[in-house]
Length: 197
Image 1: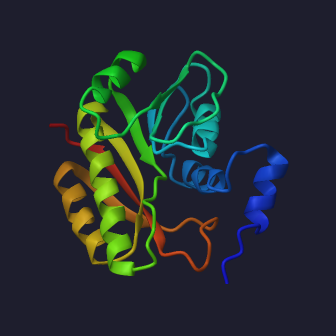
Image 2: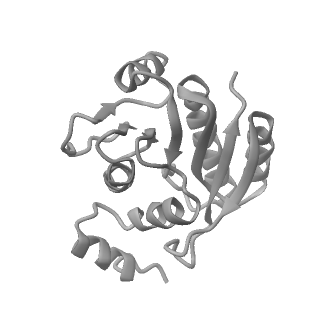
């Protein structure tokens, strides 16, 4: 049974994070060192802002976070953070992100999920298409040697995306954080050593 208010949900409320998803990134950020202090990061599909909160903490004052979502999001403090209320496929977006960062990003991360239908095949396809859209954004905003992390729903489409990532990155892994709900079909694809384009 789906239980929204689980331990991680309660913990997020107590510790001031905007979503339980913050703990997935805290786990990945610690164990996998997805981002480091001073890094410049793109947070694609950022609303309500749980991952952006964690990213700002991880990169510190010398780092920068550019957050993007089609849904509005309450602002976060600091001149090293900017929110773009935009679709990740907007052709003008990559140049604006790079202009804010001052250079290409060290990492592009995404906890975005599509609106689900309850039909597994459809939801998996939508999830894969969303990851491909974020990957396209990364192609124009990620530096050579950079890191890509994105949530995807398990299934045949996810395997296709893994193959696509392997064409552009030196290392690709599947990861399922402890903070992921037991009944969830989601996992994360972590790709490192971007070869550039």
